[in-house]
Length: 138
Image (cartoon, rainbow, N blue to C red; front, side, top):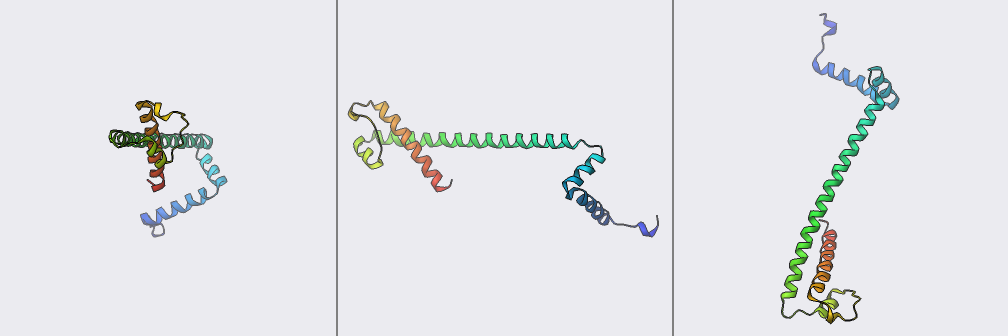
């Protein structure tokens, strides 16, 4: 080998990268280069977009799963909270309605069954805890 062609690995890498950078800098150049190498650019783009879409769907599914898990945890917290309220001998639904500023559309609140009251309160506190958590940025 002559002395003119002595290059280090670093020099060779820089040369290859400069050629690649030039060919991929412009979209048209990149398409032309890939096509000249016998690659189907349309297929590459199509497959790449499919992979991106699949990854996006996986991310969304994971996000939904996390939200559902979080919602279930908050609902359990609300259930415990309501159970504590209802087990308190001094519990008054009318006082709680005023304190929590609940808007109920029942003519005879006194006639509500304990299960109905419990379900109303669980829904209310689940939503309240969700809003509190969102407000705190968690």
